[in-house]
Amino acid sequence: MKLKKDWLDEKLRQGVDGRVHWAVAAAIFAVATALFAYFAYHARYATFDTFNARDLPGLLTAVTVMFTTLYASALAVQFFILQRGRAVAAIYLMAALITGLSLLGKISLLDYVSDDFDIFLSEWIWMMSEESLRGALGLYLGDYNPPYLYLLAIMSRFTDFSFLYMVKFVSIGADILLAYFAMKLVSFKSEGPVFQLSFFHLTLLLPTVVLNGAYWAQCDAIYAGLALGGLYMGLKKHPCASIVLFTVALSFKLQAIFLLPMLLPLWSVKRLRLRHLLLAPPVYMAMLVPALIGGKTLHSVLTVYLQQANNYAELTMNAPSIYQLMPTASFREFNGMGILFALALVFCLCAAMYQKRRTLTAQSMILCAALMCLAIPLVLPRMHERYFFLADVLALVVVAYNPKRFYLPLAVGFASYCCYVEALPGPALYPLSYMSLIMIGATALVAYDLARQLRADEADAHATYLLGAEERA
Picture 1 (tube, rainbow, N blue to C red):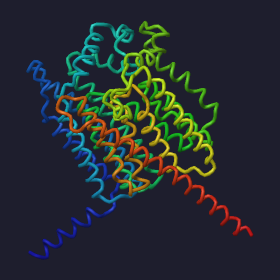
Picture 2 (picture 1 turned 90 degrees about the horizontal axis):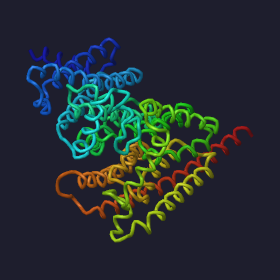
Picture 3 (picture 1 turned 180 degrees about the horizontal axis):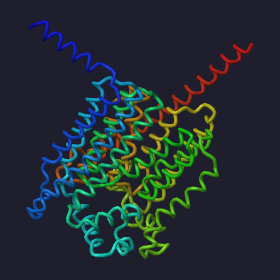
Picture 4 (picture 1 turned 45 degrees about the vertical axis):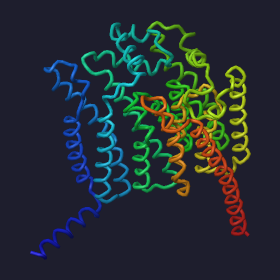
């Protein structure tokens, strides 16, 4: 009997540690997806309590199909990477389990109704539902740029479903896009599938990523995922795709502008040319065409961001910026100064990167991107707590290149999280001035690492050149 037990243990170990054939991977995928669908169907959906009991099975089926599709898509991408990397069976099982738990955790947050959704989003969708689709596209609602309103207009066609779940479904789907491009930025450091997928899952589990979409029903993951995609495509020498992704990101939210200055370093290392920038205007205008067809004027759709900026006349709105340290500062006096200071920081950073253009590496480019997403909202006025969203993710990506900075995403994420709590119901955790100090420290640390990396890149390039000269001699 003992021999039989030992034999079974050994067989199980061999199965878990062995390479996976594509057919076995497909079987794991099918079983995992079926299990996720079962748990997703039996999750608690309190919003459906307001619907007719006869409609409940259909509603549960619909929401199960929606989130199972997300799960299957995320898992398919991971399994493809694992197949290429010839990973063992244990990694497939872990990927299926962690992805499932992550999505089910977000599903558990679906029923929370934030003030932003209750006062604005739900009202807008309901008003759109009273119009034809074309009429809905032409409504003047809030201060969002048209592309996100298109998504709300589509949701308004499904009046027999929960608007809350649809809004959060889109945001959670964008979380997966965000995690994918964060993982692809990590791939410049290592092509190992386990290493890359670790950062895919860590991105999904970042507190601010979880809270932003699944809990708060915000959509920052859309522009952030597209912007990171633009950066990745630029580094991979796909300039057209890079410009398109950056432009679409900007069409969703103005905060994509924090990463747009990376176009200059990408140009300096010849990852793109000036002619590629000609793609931006037609792509941006194409994103506005449905609103124009709906009846909006060209002036209104082109000036949304100007109107949006004029709606806020405060130096900071729960953001961990330097203005938390200046509680008595006047908006009128410091608004212009903050904008000019941010422009000066961007100019200096781009100039430094241009000077080192012959020796830039992926690591220095990613450090530069992280520094921009930290420094710009740190000094700009009118910043909300969510405007460090890109910085939260890029701080994690930085760790892939320098594991000694493991505390960087912890610090940045903690500061952002405390500011989120300030904006949501409940008592504040810590004074926001403390969070501002944490962000200042994190920004200084990334700036130091970038300066050191630029020097290291230059030294490595010089050493390589000398070695080549010696070999030629």
